[in-house]
Length: 125
Image 1 (cartoon, rainbow, N blue to C red):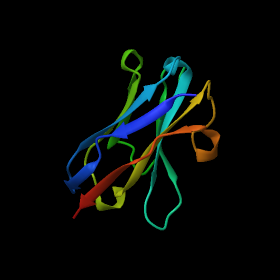
Image 2: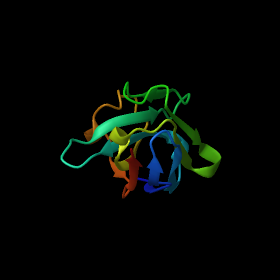
Image 3: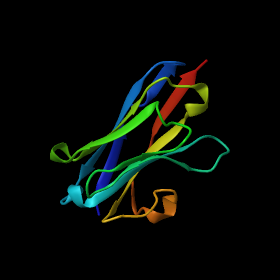
Image 4: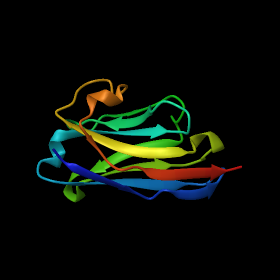
């Protein structure tokens, strides 16, 4: 399994931008699909975006489509989440997760075996 470390969270005003990074250590990162999930206080963890290991196809939740973009740089063992036009409802702890050779829907967090520690994103109104 890979070890994951998120960074890039912080406090931003509504309408602002942040870029989250998910850095992986371990061999074979290019074989892992990676998802971003978020969890707000009192709410279930929810899917935000995912990118496949093969072909790099990207998927985004309807709530962030057009505002967030997931991408990956396998040479740097890193996946990014560019977040633009942030809203107060985007406030949450953001986690990246990885699973080797994953080809599922990204919807279920339980599909992923490797998780980072999370990074807090707070959007003020």
